[in-house]
Amino acid sequence: MSMISNQSKRISIGAILTLTPLVLALMIVATVNTQSTSAGIPVDQPVAATALPTVLVELFTSEGCSDCPPADRLLGELDARQPVSGVQAIVLSEHVTYWDRQGWHDPFSLDAMTDRQEQYVRRFGLDSSFTPQMVVDGTTQFVGGDAKALVAALNKASETSKQPLQIEGARWDHGTAEFSVHGTVSKDARIFAALAIDVTHHEVSSGENKGRTLNHTAVVRVMKDFPGDAADGRSLKLAGGALAEKNEANGPVRLVVFQVDRKSAHVLGVAEQNLPR
Image (cartoon, rainbow, N blue to C red):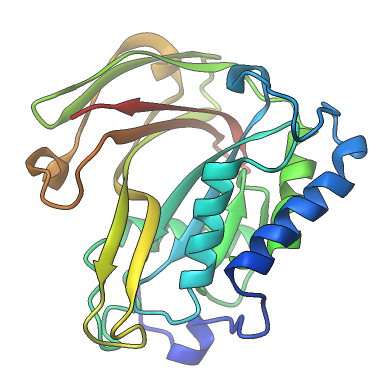
């Protein structure tokens, strides 16, 4: 992809609140919207995760962008707290490459994530890619640090019924995830599988975030798509690449599987499972 100017690639979020107010805003807006959600479940009422509608939240980000850390933290808070009642958010952090020539090469950036974001640019009719950007269920996009937009998108997505999708028999075997997917078999859909890891205390030594220590949640290290009939329970494999060496982060690998409509790119179903390494 041709390089676009630094300014056109970044949406400034300097006016957006810092971490604590972001989290408070997220929880407050979620509480206000509790009665209007389809499930109508109070925030403090324990609910089994499988009983909630699942929603995919993708964050396009980069360690080279000084506006991205607040959005990274917001994604992490969403994943850890799940503050929006009546919905379970499954998150992915997708690091793009177009910031890599701006003073810091993001070791988690992937050309595949840059290409994926460019597909969304065309789907949404945007002028160009930018960071940070969140996309919810492939239907809504907004500036990645906007907590109110995130809550609104989650509430809207929770009102759309999902097709059942389950991961079964998943295991980590010598650097490869082996699993099967059970769901609606459709020639008009694709199945995507991603392997992601949590990254903590990663030091940035140059670029806009020089001197900062960053934390990331569910960083995609590999993503692969399968045909729609792969949801028939057949055995699937996804090689983890560098994850096999544990040279990026310790801890489990997140296996996230989602079904996407071929034409609209809307997420039809999504599931997640942790795989110990």
